[in-house]
Image (cartoon, rainbow, N blue to C red; front, side, top):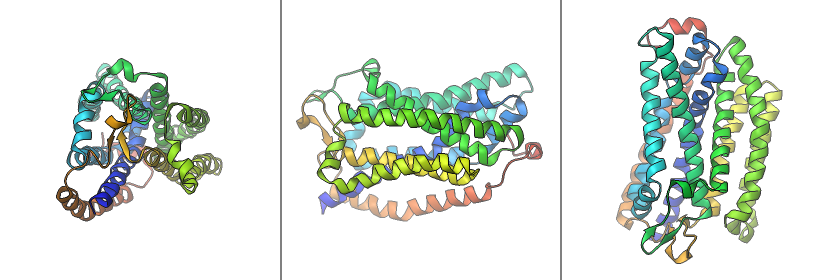
Length: 343
């Protein structure tokens, strides 16, 4: 029974990260695109208000993923906050700055004031996108773990495969964000967003192919797939979803393109999670020191209680977010910026 619970929680852990990347990914993308697609203050306000009612709810999945790591896999949590202390702290500061910037930007009608907070929104969106990619790429290829713990620093994490992971995540989120703006914004901003989505897609395709090739040489992620070829259906879904983004862009079906992008992110995350199993923090010094879903989990009682809680509350959160998406599904207009609630 304990083995089954550990197995379930490993994939629930992966699912929560996938949901975070899928939901918060597009508003990271919008923030990163702010200085490039926002030609004037009206454009920038439209971009910010396109994610305004949703961005903070999306970050619930990050808190949930962190909480699950702490409760279900306490040893992984302990190592994570020692090995990734600096990047996690930078991500935290970036998220705080970004959240504050949304609120403060419109408090004073001054070009300098707004430019300051626009810069903060950009930094607060780009930094987490890159660092999440760097962190997970390093997990995939293994960390210098032994009986004395983690041996490494931020510079160690900035290796070629880690940097490639950071670029891939950033392009994922830029594509996701530009598609979101294609759905939500009007006029010339919409047109620029569509052009950006098409251009970014080409770069994303190239980096994705490069990442898949590098993954074969840098990581053991393909071992599970070669042992169980049926699992190759997951990367196949990822490839088809990514191609679907371009197909729907050409058809001017922007919501379908965004949905295909969301499916690409979720299936790509599971491609890596499945390849990683049962490891969570693999050691590249000796596999005996790897933290797995089985040697780093909490007690059976803890996993059981948490599973009951998750089965009750995760559907509630998904229902709330679905309702929020439905309530704010309409395309924005300049008139919406006159509302008191608008940023």
